[in-house]
Length: 310
Image 1 (cartoon, rainbow, N blue to C red):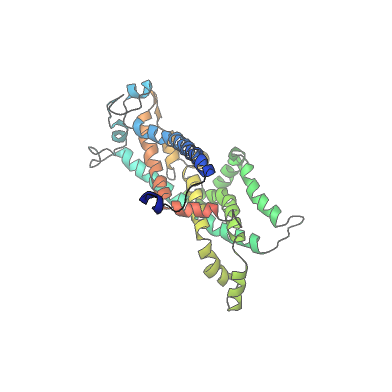
Image 2 (cartoon, one colour):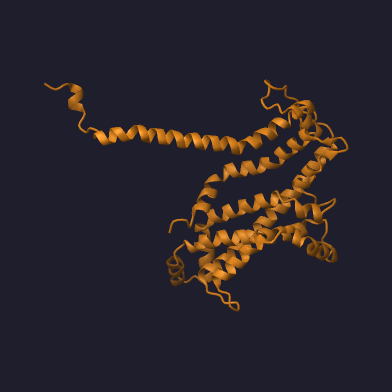
């Protein structure tokens, strides 16, 4: 006579499956433990920056980490920038300077990234669809030439750009940094977008041309919408690189076009570094990038993964 539980169970795990299950669970636990540990390592600098903005000088020097346990939080860093709740309604020169630098960084980074994506998409589409010959160079050589520009150290270009911008009266100007940043990130955009367009079947364009569209029509109406995730990923990567760029911003600007990285690096005085002010300013500077990364995460993953599997 069989019990009800035996009658209800039709399928049974084989002995090999039952032996495999504990190892599988332990493997998953190990993987998640490693991922959590890596997330802690990656997020710790942000945590340190946020907590440092609420520390006093002794807390910074002693390396206290946990609020309300190791130290009593204060708003010294935010008050120094005029961004604390008790000073936000008052006139503050540091806050006005921060907003001006923030506006400069926004205009320069967004403009340079958009311009790089537009130019890079056109160049990448041409390299993925047409065959070019420039002397002994072919498409692969031209693509590598673009990417090889990243090998050149920025300090090598410092003096030529300084002399060129002085002759063109473009020192301490937004347009000067926009053009320079566009050239800086353009190779990365071309490399990303070339793989994007190469992963799109050419039959789609051929069908569009049969329906009466030209090359530009097929590119704008068929190819670009499909490659949009890659363009968003290239734009965000360009935005991060240009937003955080310090060397050329410090070299080619002085008063009117200074950006946030230059302001962060200037938080020093005769008595040393104002760590709390620098931490508050750094977190305020990276907060927009964090928000953009969270909002556009799915585009970043789709864009960076596209072309990996063909």
